[in-house]
Image (tube, rainbow, N blue to C red; front, side, top):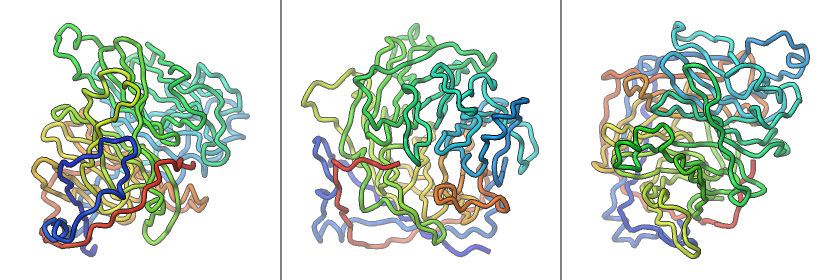
Length: 449
């Protein structure tokens, strides 16, 4: 039996941060404002967490279906191999496994969806092992170097974001320019490559996440083209968003102080185990109906948004302020975030609460979808799966243990989970008054990886 858990979400109304020097520390409330502002506390009584979550796959350490290559086997270090990205295909699951440290044989892999629940399958290199020569120490910049996340588009193509950086936790070696490789998921063949202009990148750039937006045209002929879409890409260590226009094959960069880490929120607590990571913008989610891109740095408890019409309108004029909205505050920091396009509910995973929660910013309604102190440790991804009838999936990794080199092969560390849609969570809303804390915010501080 699990104890009650508290999840705190504060809705922040629409006065907005619109200036380049915006600092959350300037968002202060008077005593009267604090008294009027209510923070919703949800007490989720979960009789058995295993009834709320289906464990699709799980591993202590990941294993691969290796080719007959003794060098690749010799260099493999399973204790350094941890996924950060998950995409749900029709018959496969795709995993981005960046080269955070040495010893990652393949940076992009797949497993079949047809396996029994809870199994630990060996990973298949995607599209095949010839793309992963970096795993044996042979750097080929036309191949795959370090993939954090992948996304599927409406044309059944897989967009693979390659950071071009290896050992990013230890010594951050840029060995190739970042790029996007687009594969046809039916044939596993490369159909397009995207390279970014050098002026958009910074020495510390680390491209970690992307979302695809195919809603930016009302022309039916153009919208039927697979390439008529925009990609919004997070630069986590040199915080900013790169906007890519697929139809024009053009890209530009925007930035804002809200994309930087909050130095007061760079420490995390998972089950009493603390670690520090000053990462900037990484969580991204798109609301087609609202025309918004939601984003969050890892080191913050806040969620922001910016209009996709503004992002897609082209490079900002010099001196133009990016119109960023402070959407709300969460009970703790988080990485994965998604939007259910059916009702614009935001789905997220607060790290300290080891939970998956849903919040509709339009109605201010809340729901705890699942909570499990063991299975939901550090959700690197939370996904609304179009190719699974809108089910919610998550990738939990116990990243803090890999980061601290304390992950054990005798424990389950990595899980792919699916939220079972049933009436297993009963909610009792309460109202709690709490003084708003306005943390210091240093817009010049860069994230460290």
